[in-house]
Length: 312
Ligand SMILES: Nc1nc2c(ncn2[C@@H]2O[C@H](COP(=O)(O)OP(=O)(O)OP(=O)(O)O)[C@@H](O)[C@H]2O)c(=O)[nH]1
Ligand SMILES: [Mg+2]
Image (tube, rainbow, N blue to C red; front, top):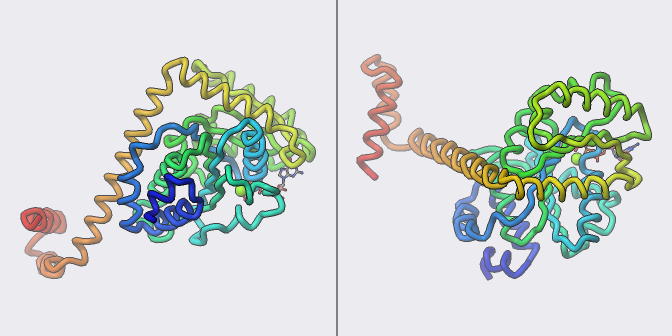
């Protein structure tokens, strides 16, 4: 059975295999994505971001349990750009994961980028599409608070949840890398440990000072560890999805996502092309031209590209 057939039949192993191929940048993944792409676009994609250790994974596990109770099929991807080892952080945590690991209606996976030229955005975008085509109703994408990655991933999701915690100094300052602007729901977690109310009011003040759109992000305090927050967060996730649909913003989001996906694909194709050219037959002779100052690097590059196009 092909991977795509496996995916259609709800085989988790096919999904896992496909995501490994995506991480590697394998051509088989590219072919599979082409086949399944028309089946995507149904899931509610939720980004969960924030500084390291704030309780993002804990909250996601709780939310997954909550959405299972609501009859939804759940996909979870933890994006870890620094780790080449897939299945690390998340899967190592079977205790916190509880019965989710064996639940047929939940797919959990952490992923790195391994050999993927397009990097984390390309791999994440493809993995979202795989879980979408697999039939997930809701997909959580955890990003490790590495600033740029979170913001990039926010273009690929419908709703962004930002999780912070009290006790690390200026918590609000920690969101300056652009995360603050993309958040739809704030969760101040670990309310059992510190002054979550103060952090929540700082966030609320900052929100009031900012530009008011047609969605005002709620600021919730939580103790994800004890499972005291997921119902409320889940309600707001559903509310935001309804808001997107009813306000017409969903169409805008879809267009932005399509733009982002196309840009990611262009960048990756260009990188692949560059790599192919630099290992091609003519490359060394053009290096000689540059070395001997007969051509500028730019001129040599243009000639090299022209030559390769005429050979297409
Ligand atoms: N006291 C307390 N600890 C919590 C709470 N939520 C999570 N933790 C603990 O905080 C630690 C980090 O939680 P994670 O869920 O792994 O946090 P994370 O944001 O996913 O961490 P990274 O993925 O490493 O950035 C774990 O030891 C959790 O058990 C909470 O509400 N209160
Ligand atoms: Mg985590």
